[in-house]
Image 1 (tube, rainbow, N blue to C red):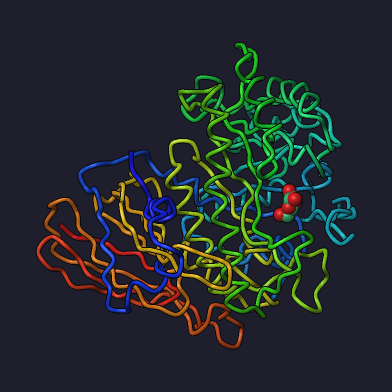
Image 2 (image 1 turned 180 degrees about the horizontal axis):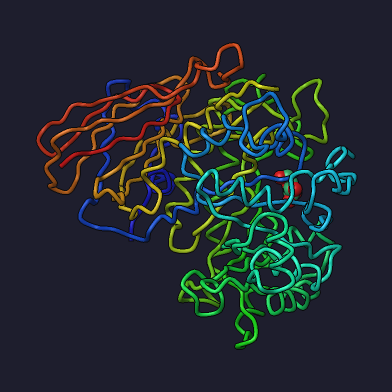
Length: 530
Ligand code: AHR
């Protein structure tokens, strides 16, 4: 068993809060014990997945500009965005929604561009949906960024037949009628649909279904929506993973019902994932500004986001009851910070700025997912471009990388790395009536064989000196990058894109330990060379 520092600190209960906050001076050193000789579950690269919905400028403008655009593109897909996403090694992209998915009819988005059927995106600002970005364009995009497709089918307003036909279009051999249609649209080879979402938020925008109603429907989709690509057919090398709708935040009704139903499955159907959606909002409807906030708002939003740990633990406990072997992963396929829409923007487009606070929140959530790596094997931050906690913002031909983007870049070595336990007790810091851990940390043994350590200093005003030890392992060198900014609400803008960007950070190697000074409000990732 491992224990995490802030959980450990939270359970200590020995010092009063005031004592805890004031006992240490700036010169205090925080010991972090990295149990380098132990490894836990693999942190699946899919934990770093993205979500791209037809919503505002998430697809149109953000990814798709069309072949005739003056913005440099490959077959209509922005070159700059592709190149930025390739650098963060996006493992999978969830598409086309979201709420949009349960009103999406795939036939509107295939065939000659001039013949595409324009519709209205009733979920998101009643904007025009030209359907110029459809299945073939999505698959092209996924391939351009070297990622994998996570397609959500329409369970809310579609039919099992419509979804089955869509999968046939994407995956059946070119000798079949469906495959011939795909080939006529320029793609004779079957596409790889690695992940299949069986609806979206069926407890709300996806049809407001009782859990029992949903599971009856889910079984039909799980049975009949087939993947015909030979490598992915049953018992194939890369079987498609079907992800059922699961809980809405802490509500366990869907968790219980879907997992109980799963235990009753036979040869005819199965699911390979249970979705969880949970946003950090600061209340509903979201009314916290993404740029204009103080340390109190910073602290309270971080406090809220740390609730992800307990939420995963409670759903995992239910899943363990039905699935002790952890065959069904918990897939947190919508999470992130959802704040007030940026002033002057269409509120239905969910456009918000992205600050250093968002970056810290991203790192804390990735750390939580890593600690639950045995059950949480996939997540999708909402959303990839121009929507909610985006990696990338675009404005016509301009592109901006957000602080959250840089967290994903710095965390690349954690993709498919083996979790390594860490122990620490950094104490807490206090803002008003909010108490938070001072630091958070995870470690992992990367695919490259190196030991990696990620440390977040949550405290906005106090540096943290950490001294990491490695169970006797001789460390020869340490190198890393740190992301910080002048203020917790520092942002990157089109005029000043380098306000919050990673900078090199190093430390002192002494015997078997490494000492580093972490600036206040920062996230650092270190590589330890043995
Ligand atoms: O990410 C925005 C929306 O949030 C999604 O469409 C929906 O699934 C969720 O409620």
